[in-house]
Amino acid sequence: MMSDFATRASQLDETDPLRDYPAEFLGSDDPEIVAYLDGNSLGRPTRATAQRLAAFLTEGWGGRLIRGWEEQWFDLPLTIGDRIGAAVLGAAAGQTTVGDSTTVLLYKLARGAMALRPGRTEIVLDRDNFPTDRYLLESIASDLGLTLRWIETDFAGGVTARAVGDAVSEHTALVVLSHVAYRSGYLLDAAAVCAATHAAGALLLLDLCHSAGSVEIELDRWAIDFAVGCTYKYLNGGPGAPAFAYVAAAHQADFTQPIWGWMGREKPFEMAQGYVPAAGIRRVISGTPAIVGMIPIQDTLDLIEQVGMAAVRAKSVALTEFAVELAQTWLLPLEVRMSSPLDPARRGGHVTIDHPRFQEITARLWQRGIIPDFRPPQGIRLGMSPLSTTFGEVLAGVRAIRDELTTH
Image 1 (tube, one colour):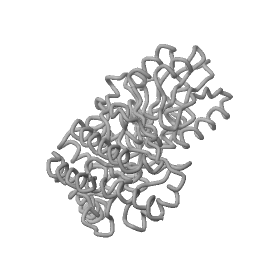
Image 2 (image 1 turned 30 degrees about the vertical axis):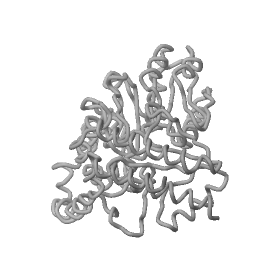
Image 3 (image 1 turned 120 degrees about the horizontal axis):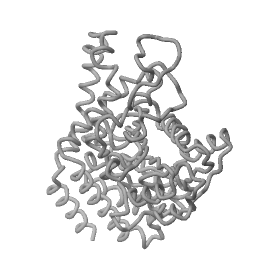
Image 4 (image 1 turned 180 degrees about the vertical axis):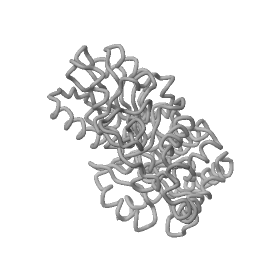
């Protein structure tokens, strides 16, 4: 069986339409990294990014100096935002901007959304959403005297449209959910959830951190109100790279976010007295944007624009299907539990498996050059990044987990 899977992995890599793309990433030829299976937490840098950053230091920052603001940097959050919108989010121009962390943008969008539904007193969210989302909404609810309406979910599942329909009411102002659950990988039926939310007169804010760059997204077509996501996972922006925010065009004229800064003001360089929000998506911006942090995102967008998100998603499904097959054959007999949906249509770009020993095993895997991540209470996440991960890496990773379970 081992040789059969090894042959399969080799064949899958040879016939992969994206087989040339892993070589575009730094570290792909590092002999100490046998399998990098954590692209859903931190993506590899591209080789092009190393060149672009070096050129920016000497030619952009070093050469243009302050002139860079007028020549490019002032509009860069919107320029890159439009590229993310078109290539990754299914969003028309003028609705996406880049800047701040995911947490800060979540706060801005959630507070701005609440102001669009005055008199409503409830926010709906789920117990298994990412901690930042939960903590942030607890803070907002405490500040504004709101009620949090919790949806209970299973670690191996996620939120359904029916559960949202049961939770929302005439009191609901906002529903905040992750498009792909950070632990289980459950892929939300965003269009159905949005319809259920709107039926109650509420607004929907999606967290796209674990879906942007791994699954196909159609924010405009699904009629999503607001969305936020990070760029350091599947978009390979690097540690702490700025996040992106989407505000549907229909809401922008009335949308006001609470962190008023000079870069989000109308005619910011006039330095005028009093805050007047800029027109359109620029009003989401607060302070000076992190220009250096935006540079690497452009190189991954170059790659995604070349191949298209349909090809990226097809590779993602093939990788996770192979991981599931290996886990079912080698790991489930060893009392490992599958904690991700088996249906690829309901699964994002990572697979989570559970076992009581996985925390200690993860540390040993890292020493062997096998790099997944651990998520409590006892889960290993296998995060396959479609542009940079090979089927051979998936094989090596699951085989190493089996070896650790059987030899220690």
